[in-house]
Amino acid sequence: MTDTVMGDGLLAATIARRPPAVLVVARDGWDTSDWEAAHGRGEPWLPVWTELHRVVIGPLVRPGARGCVWCVQKWRSSAPERAPWTGELRKDERIAAEPSAWLSGFAAEAVADLVHAGVAEDCCWFLDLRDLSLSRHAFLPDPLCAVCGALPEDTAALAEIVPQARPKPRPGASRIRALSEARLASCYVDAETGVVAPPRGMRDSIVALTEAVLAEYGYKGEAGFGRTRDFASSRATAVAEALERLGGQWPWGKRTTVRGSYAELAEHAVDPRTLGLLPAGTYLEPDGHHQPFTEDAVVSWVWAYSFGQGRPVLVPESHAYYRTDWQPGAQADKPFTFEISNGCALGGSVEEAVLHGILEIVERDAFLLTWYARMPVPEVDLAGAPDPRIGLVVERIERTGYRVRAFDITLTEGIRAFWVLAQDTTGDEGRPRVVSTSGSALDPVAALLTALGELAPIVQVELARYPAEAERGRRMAADPELVRIMTDHSVCAATPEAFDRFDFLLSRDRVISWEEVLGRRPWPLHADLRDDLTEAVDRMLAGGMDVVVVNQTSPLHEAADLHCVKVIAPGALSMTFGHRNRRTTGLPRLLEVPHRLGHAARPLTEADLNPHPHPFP
Image (tube, rainbow, N blue to C red; front, side, top):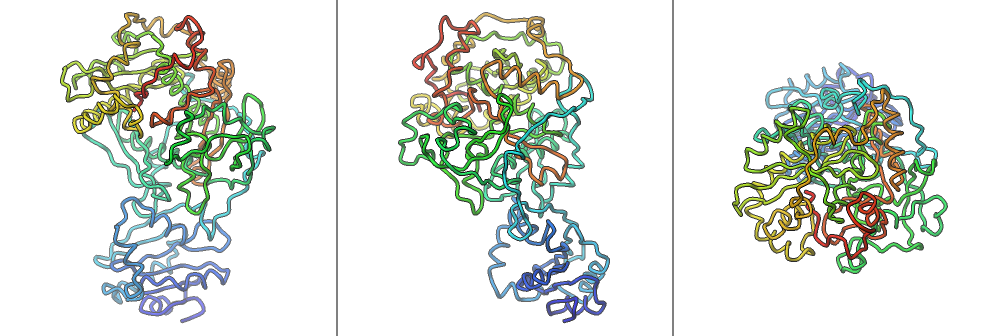
């Protein structure tokens, strides 16, 4: 066509009348066969093409720079709300080469004006040929893009963490800044090209509940949820949780390079046995997704930072990231254990992210240790709560026919955690008998509010789901091996047949006042979040655990100045789903802590442990 226009047809001819400043590759159909040749010229170029009823303009591609048209196409093909038929249409060569019937000379002139205006430098534009409406779609470079992506090698040096001073907005805060819904939306949210689909508020929920679904990049169905007191903060929280989930899937920011056996790497590696292994029988199942740990098993490892040892250490990649088997193009190892998003957290700094990862570890460890050891922990007097928000959430849940109860499950490290439980008061066997969850925070009021904020929507979901699942729940209560997935746990625990399993909690008369709660090893009011992190790490180490941090931050997180980590605490109990996937083997704390807390006359044995599936939803 000309030196600065490649292609043929109406669009190319119209654009060529005024030679553009950069190379333009224009087609009247979906044919993208010129793209590789244009990219091979080593100069900036702008793709323009037509898809039935619209023209796509951009983005400007700069060879050697991150962010290209192939990134855009990957995000578009991964959009959860994409039209299911578009991918099939593009495979039809007749449609790909056929000019759009909606493409007119007037529309081509509009496209040429947009090209010459240089509006597609960091985004793409859709011109709807039916009404000439225009929409802008921003995107982020795909770190895994085969054309422009280039991940650095994972190294011990990159794993180093040296906590920096992080002044807090107020002494009681655990975040250095609030989430900005506007910034998160502009960086990540777009129905066509976003990392996250537009959040959806569930307006019939007890609390402001929002879901934000991640792009279906390899794995489908990953989402973040926001449960707050208003929909603006709920949307921001949902997007942030989706980004946390993204970081935990597989390495988006570094390229794994270490491969070997524990026997070869033991000097630098965390012993997988300290993470809790599965029951021996689970490894023998014919459909098993795990391999038994042996010191000679060869797997991939990633670098992390051990606060206990004060140095970088190696952990199995399949433990540091929980969806490595879904990473496109990767060959994943069979993991030694069942692992999910335990300890994954997002923050405005790495210190903040690590602190909140610790809080999640503490919450889940405390819940599971209380369950498996059947510890008779004290109930908390909710009526005397010092924050009126606690009473308001409790009252809202109790309108549904439940009595809300809370139990202090704080363990030896003294980081506050609560088990909250909704107990049915109607006697209707078509309703869940019990619904449970938990929460943790530095401050007991914040911990309880977190737990209640989780409980409220879960009660609503279980009320709607249970009638159809009740019979299956009874079968699971009789045979724990039928409890296979996350939702099975709450259904099994909700049955009348499972109710007596909560006797260690519900049949006790010990209720403690809020004066007692607040007086138990209160958290110091630090002005700097680094001091909170140091305090939390010291308490974890004193409690017989380590704090090992995998930095999962990627360029996608850095776009909004966010940090993503996974905290691993060797010695702690990790949340698992599927009774056969429980990880209680090889964890001395599980047997010793109940005795140290005064809940058992002696250290427990394996035979003393609760044999029933945990009720965490």
